[in-house]
Amino acid sequence: MRSSKLFDRLVVAVLYNSAKKAFFTVEERISQLEELTRGYDNVSVASFSGLLVDFARQADARIIVRGLRAVTDFANEFQLALLNKNMAEEIETVFVAANTQHLYLSSSIVKEIAMYGGNIDNMVPESIKRELEKKISENR
Image 1 (cartoon, rainbow, N blue to C red):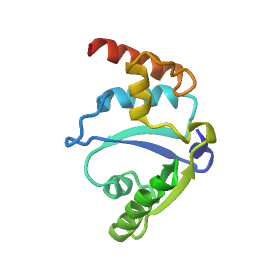
Image 2 (spheres, rainbow, N blue to C red):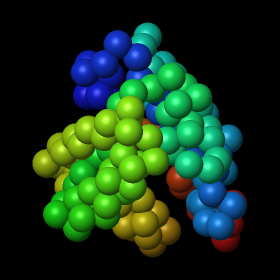
Image 3 (spheres, one colour):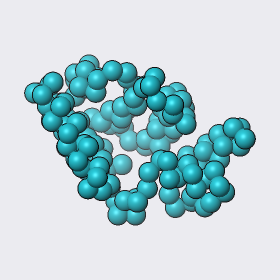
């Protein structure tokens, strides 16, 4: 986890968004992230609803880290960063570019490939692959 090397403390924030139908529940996503970050002493996982800047303030965070895959991500993320800066001047946004082997990936693409029985071995960690396949089989 590259961002954990950049900061003394990193909180991975999971948004609870009632307007969006997520494939995994917030609790499942938290559990997955906790498993994936288990070896990182400076990383914790938490959920929130509402505004990210409010959560950042609550967590006493001064920097929001956002990942970028492509130029299209940047346009949206830049707009959000400016809005967040307007609402919370004391909080900065830092962008981290995705590793080149993940530039083309999105959760919807991975889910679709998995739903059709495609090989996602090199796209997600093994623990996520197992949970994704389990969830797909439960929903059939």
